[in-house]
Image (cartoon, rainbow, N blue to C red; front, top):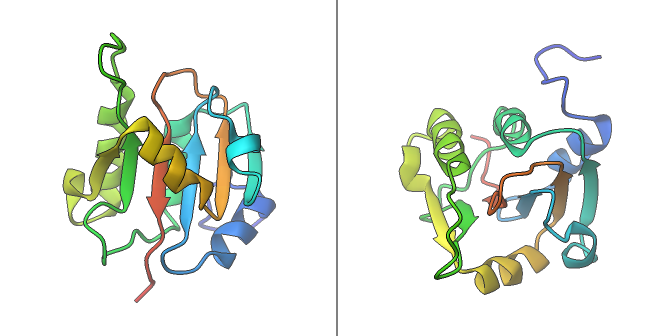
Length: 145
């Protein structure tokens, strides 16, 4: 055990977060996200028993967000006409605001197809058991100064 590191972060995930460099992307996928197929060229870490908010909160304690891009955090837009509500986005924005001086301004949105395209190039994927729909979130790593 180590001091100061959230207990939810496994040794495998800590290693991956440490290996990632500036500009690398991390996807935290909900329970419906096809992490194994979209992430076939990256590292997939299973965290099926955990929700996306608790994973995001722990990751943001160690993971610097990229200050060289406008939106280092991206959400998957709801498809037009889909009547889904996304209250989890408010929780995400609150967590990001607590970790980044830009607040909610650090969070952007991508269309579903653009999100999947960006995700295919991600370094790592965390597959959670999150049951909320459209709860996928993509983070771009910054630098530690």
